[in-house]
Length: 153
Image (cartoon, rainbow, N blue to C red; front, top):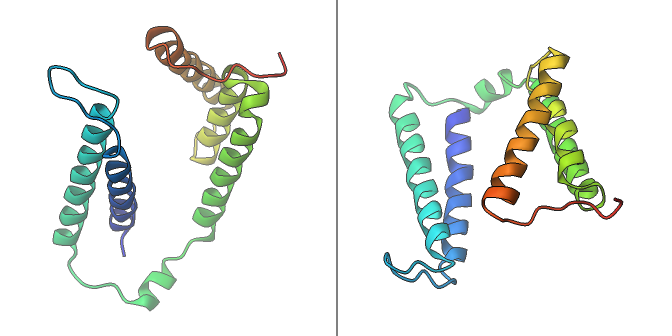
């Protein structure tokens, strides 16, 4: 199974779950949208996009891959990268409420950029800080969505 197909199946399941859960909220109408309106639309789009990627990938498949072919393409570096990403995100979730969004997000983004191949440490650091501040500004200042500020400070 190709990476596109695996990702599409994952996002299809995630989108379906999100869509079904969001149906329990009141969607309202187009003139008067309620709390479930946007999640229902987003879940539907996620399902549609995942289906389009899955169908496109299946059409491009020229021959079926065998289990031995999949095993030959196994790369331990990719598995190590995935484990490192999961570890970083898990650590981030543990320290987020204590340290706060603005102090915990730049190191996470720095580490993720480095794991994914960004070897310029200065660029990774700047990108982590700028992305965190922009995300903070959009959600906290512009949209008034509460963001964890940390209990330590």
